[in-house]
Length: 489
Ligand SMILES: Cc1cc2nc3c(=O)[nH]c(=O)nc-3n(C[C@H](O)[C@H](O)[C@H](O)COP(=O)(O)OP(=O)(O)OC[C@H]3O[C@@H](n4cnc5c(N)ncnc54)[C@H](O)[C@@H]3O)c2cc1C
Image: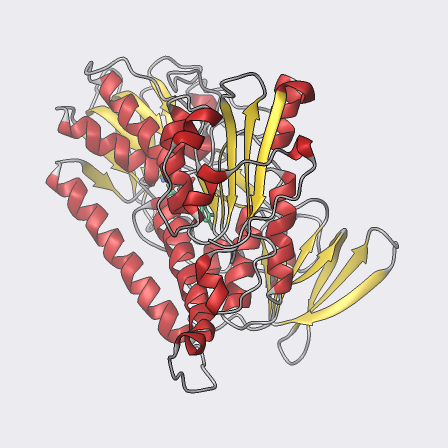
């Protein structure tokens, strides 16, 4: 292999970042190959091309979230005159089949797109032989050597299993399995406080399943904590049970197939037990770097996170090897950032542009039953960075119009805008809790990316009657101590 370069660019990982990078580079004239391989989950779940987002992340998650929201709309419907026959039942099998078929169509679509753009696709598991060469192994054990001038690592991550809890690996599942279950998971214990944990617990509750979330410490670490509390408060009001400051110690299978979970209540020190049909671990993710033999190419990783260290140009410790997406240290674990980083990297490699990815003010949304969208800094981060005296927070509790006729409780519908205090009061962060939070936040993200000030947001004319217009009406600052409840539209 010495000196032979099969490709201009070799991309390891056919997920959000890898596919975007490969397609862009091929379009710009490079000879490109993508290698992708899905190691089945410990439970044996496997899927096709497209990575986490398509198969076990954003796409099936949002579709099942929608299924759960529809349940709420069916309950609203009689208020609006619909005669809905009771009881309304949900069929997990039917939903799962429809979602899984859609995901399979996306897998196929990705293969076709690679073919159309003349990107060579290999279904092999790659590891480095040296800094220009990888060895790929097929499911059947056949080895292939590939080499390239440039190599992009976009291998993402996988859910973490606890290592110290008896029965955790044997009987538990993760987000790698939940979307591919053919049968309803039934009464479920979700362990973790990550957005994945809360989103899964939210849709399971919404589908009518008895759902408990067990968390050791705070929910949604890294997000604004006031908003995070409101998210869980709303979930609790909708029927999700929370076991806070608790940690599981053992999972045992009972003769009837149910799972008996033993946990410790960290506040009282007492041991408790409960029986569930499914235990879902959502305690974080680990980067897929372990089987890559990165040391053969001299690629450095962070000793703490095991993620690949990169600079602003996505370059690793080896100048012609790059890492993008979830596997790269310090990057948001989000599909759009992986895609944009991949495209921009391809353009730089092809000499088309010098633009580097700007990771600031990346908007995101947590798709819990009441959705939480945010962009920019949390209130805590803003205070820590700028000092409490330099930060002004405008906020409001509001009632979405849709909630009125349906007599829904809107206690947690809340918006806050974190600004610099000094005029014109640059917006540092926007936090929106309510229906369609993703759509609302996406729109305001442009303004905030462009450096919008509070004054400019206040001069923005609202669209009536929407929830988004409430952002442009935020007049009450937290400092004033006035009641931030907005009455009616
Ligand atoms: C439940 C869940 C919900 C999510 N929801 C959202 C959301 O709503 N919005 C959002 O923006 N993000 C969401 N994400 C995050 C998003 O899915 C990831 O940030 C994104 O997929 C990362 O893309 P990537 O290219 O880095 O890696 P991935 O998409 O994970 O792709 C990596 C690919 O590389 C393959 N691979 C790994 N090792 C090798 C190897 N040695 N050889 C060959 N192939 C290999 C993997 O099998 C995989 O196919 C969610 C994630 C989860 C788990």
